[in-house]
Length: 361
Length: 270
Image (cartoon, rainbow over all chains, first blue to last red):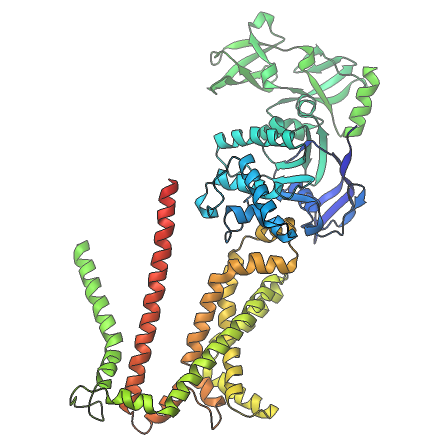
């Protein structure tokens, strides 16, 4: 049984006129890796700052370990933060940075030295204790920032887009390291990012945010396979989103044809949006295709070809194929009934879950 | 073409420095004159230096000047630093701008006006003129300088440093003493030295607020110059010039040493 550590109850936050969070409810369980995912300005960093105590909620309750902490100052909260720009103290060396929290608490020197040494070992910076901050590379500064935060034994570690300043390769490595670190320590991580790839790769649970609201939350697989609306489908990975009509249960019509699918529980003839992921689409001969498309362009992406095409109704299709195709040729397009995902307009997450429970029984 | 240009640039530089420094060197040269006046160099002698060191009144005034400069710049640095922190922490940009403008007005307004207003102020309060009044007015005109040196450093500081310190458990006082003040140190030091030099050579303000028994170097030299400058003043100027030259040289070598060390470390990493 996992235990709830942080809870938001109808939390709002406004700066003067602008409302940056509109009634956020969320539950964070201990020991998991959470990601707040959204475009810039979606309010994800605001949530992090509210948890850390750097800003105050306009209304609503923030509950930590069963107690309301809205009025607890940042220096009394049992969470620590890794900042986007690292925020290492330039007047201290690596050792002093990592020891900062413990020095304030008055921990004795021997213990501090022990802890700092083990922290630096953990982030693979053993032997860097005497370096000054401006001698470190971006990736090394990142590790010092993580060590500094974890040296205080926080119950929750907050990470504010910590990888965004690193180059691609290093970012990939750090994703694995962070994930591994979280699993080893068993501390709750709350990670803020606008990079969907990062979110999918690292998280146990993702909150997708836009315009101050949580649109959907779920495991990476759930969110990728069953996005709840147009925004989520578009933001998480690439998608083909086509207008369609749900004829009846398990029968959807789009691009001028009727297809078998696996969704149900909607009104007959309800207008919906149909999502098909590019990697679920396959090109075949025109006779075998469920749809006929004309190839418009293709580009080589290393492990696959990204092909764009249009069908006879002028719907755009993006396809990921292992083999190249011929420009302007007519090809068949196939997919399985399970690949079709239906999104209703204005369906909330709760309604969606309720509908799913209904027809799956 | 480029070479020709740079040669003319060098000539220009040399001429400019000659013009700027020749009066000072002439003054120093004359301090070694055996005669009584700056005209007719009648032979090398240290007689004016001897005169200077036996002139107790002059030595007392030199001491006064340095005490005033040190005390006023020290106090102004403390007050000015907290003033800069105060201005920085004001959220509303309208009020912030008003405070900044009030600060800058004090910097640009003529010394004569500041001096006169202090004189009126002190006499209104019934304070006697002397050490106290000079010290207070020097502190007052030094504060805006310190604010102006510290504020840019504050503005360039990453605000998440403060968040980070709080996050790690620092209370407001610890944030100030362990993170903000160490970060501001170069700005504070610059403000201190600026305030020190301003106080050291201030004439106009001091002239208004010194009483009978108290005087600083600038005022004293001015009043002696009215009866014809004695070469004792030249001797004093020579000594002060040498001291400031040594200070600048020392500063240069410390800087040089620091940056060399940094470079060396940087290479070690590469």
